[in-house]
Length: 81
Image 1 (cartoon, rainbow, N blue to C red):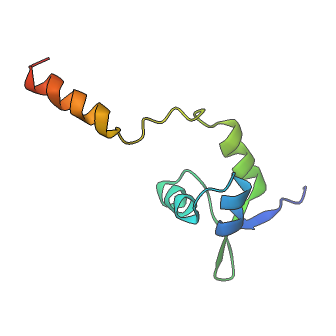
Image 2 (cartoon, one colour; image 1 turned 135 degrees about the horizontal axis):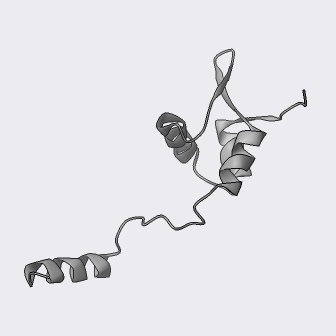
């Protein structure tokens, strides 16, 4: 069995390219990542982080609409399209 490096939430955020630790916490809550408890600390395996990177969606998440997109969507809805 090989050793797997463990990261804190803050360390995992940095390892994944400077994400917010709040994003890591959200992903833990959503089940997108799995936690390993070491005493009272929440840790994440490097292999799980690498798997997340390799199986990522390529940054294709829709995100929030920009103000100009929202305006166009509102205009289209008011025109009945």
